[in-house]
Length: 397
Image (cartoon, rainbow, N blue to C red; front, side):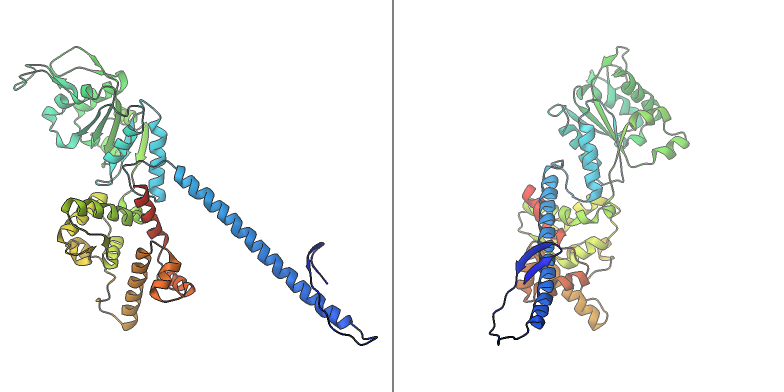
């Protein structure tokens, strides 16, 4: 009996049995035809599933290769979609020698790292990268710091001094908190951007400079323009290529990678062997709103490493601001069911961390089947991929 799917024969089915002379075999043939039809459907489903799996495997390999070849600055951590957008912008603007960049974002998100990545991935790499915090310089000296001064230009100017623009000639100058500079400095900065030249304080001799200007601000420049505190023409000169760096609360999938990096950094610096972060501490990290962004996370980890007496950072090592967040602890008051669920979730996460996100291996360590492990992970909304990503980041580092 042919096993046929449409007009295509996928195989044959045959049986042997002794028949009496003249015995009718039509019932047996109909039965075999029914079995052959079922087998044909099963073979088709299995073959389609194999082809689908092969397609998924090839697509996975393609995506892995694409991620491997995707641009990522060496000084930045994070693989969230928000950060991949930042990496793309860095890659695009780094090809230009002169385009002015305005980096926007809250305090502590890592705007200086973005500026450094732009410089290090441009053709100006190897030349000067000069950083200026405009908010830290009073109005009385900011022009001297930026453009330099001649001997005797003002009281205390006992010698000629080069400014930051002159020092950065051929390289990149990073002006942080650009929204805090005075109106008079804004005029001179506008001329530098337009004419590529400036004068030292106390001199009328123009100095030409070839400098890539990268600025950053955590303030709303549009509101400052409306209030008359920031020049509109300077704004348009600075805002040629804006890059928005997202706050940490918009890239929570990167928290674990950042935390592991800081743990290793400060553990080595303190001469300790802190290797991991407890589940309860991770839950506090994920539930906190991080007003101080990555800088606050780094400070929390540094403090926790100093307080830590074993190989893991626990919830009680974290500062009171994080303790106020809702912890996922079995010690929390509530029903027996909620306590058991909390314990089960903590055990699942610990197993996935130990096996680097390998669900099959984690299931074996917990003494359950892979199917039950998958159901429990789905129940507690745990993303095993996060733990695999953390390993990938460590491998790249």
